Amino acid sequence: MASEKNERLVNLTICLLATKKFLTKAQIFKAVAGYEGSPEASDRMFERDKEELRSLGIEIEMRSIDPLFEDEIGYRISPERYKFNLGPLSAEEITLLAVAAQAWKESALKDVALSTSLRLQSLGINSDFSELPLAPTVSHLPEIVPTILEAIESSKVIEIQYRNQEDQIEAKKIAPLGLYSRNSRWYLYANDISKNEHRSYRLDRFAGEIKRTNKGFERESFAFPNTYFPTLDAVIKIRRDFAPALMAKSSVIETEADWITCQIQFDSLNVAVAEILRNSPNVVVIQPINLVSEVTKSLSNLAAIHG
Image 1 (cartoon, rainbow, N blue to C red):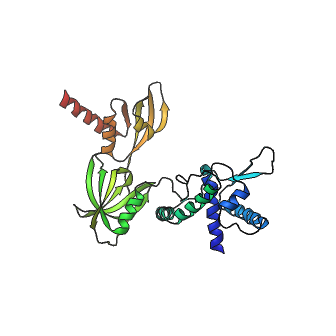
Image 2 (spheres, rainbow, N blue to C red):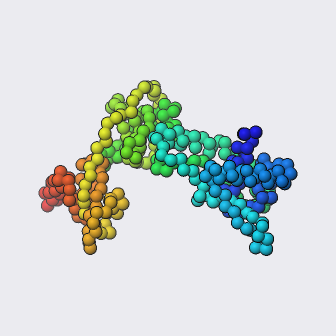
Image 3 (cartoon, rainbow, N blue to C red):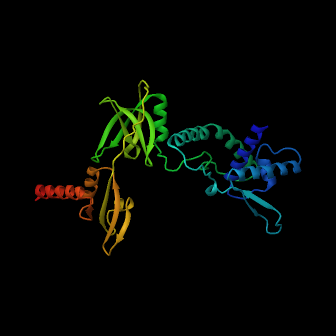
C-alpha cells in the first residue's frame, strides 16, 4: 500500500509539473494512475496527497479557472518553486546524491513520465517533460562529476587537459581514485600515470572534455590528503570597465572615478603574476609586497626584451 501511495505521489507531481495550465480535479483523476473508486474517495485521497506533498516542501498552486464559476479550482506545480531545502551537506553526501539523482532520472522516472504524458495527451492537454526538474540537483556541483564517478567506479584511466599553476594547459593520463571537497572547491585525487605519483587536481582547472580510455587500473586503498591548499590574497586596483574576469572574482573595497580598489584571492603567486600581466596596464598591485615585487620584476624583464 505504501508503494502504491508513493507511486501515486510521484505521478501527481509529474502531472502537475508537466503542464503549464491549471488542471481540474477531474482531469487529474484521469491523468494520474491511482485515483480509483468513487468521486468522493478520489477527492479524499487527493486532499491527503496535497498535504503529503506540502509537508515535503512541494507547493501546489490553486486558482479559479472559470470566471463564471469561482468554485471550479485548478491545480499545478510551478517548476520555478519545485525544490527541496536539504540543508548543509558534506562532500560525501553531495556525491552520493548526485549519483542517485542521475540513476533515478535515467531509469525509474522514464516509464512514469511516459505513462503520465500519454494520459495527458489523451485528454487534449499539452505537456512537456523534456526540461522537468524531476531528479534532484545539487548547487555548485561541477558538471564533470558524473563522468569522473563513472571512471572511478569502472577503474578506467582518463585523459584530461589540466591548467597548471603556471596557467599552462597540460595533457595528462590519470587513474581517478576519489573526489573530495575543501574550502568550497572540488578536487579529484588520482595517480598520474606518467609520473606514478598521487596528487590532487582541482575540478575547476579541467579544460575541455574528459576522455575515458579502455585502460583499466587496479584499485588501491588510499587516504585523501590532509594538506592545506595555499592561496594568495591581494589588494589590486582595476581600471573601471576593464579586466572584467578579474573584477568578477573580486570584492570591492573602494571606488574612484577611474579606478576600483578590490580584494582578490589567487591560486598562487605565479597565477597572480600571470593574470595581472595579462591585464596590464589596467591592473595595479597594492599588496602583498612579494606580489608587487614579482610583477615589477616581470615588467622590467619584458621591457628589456622588447625595448
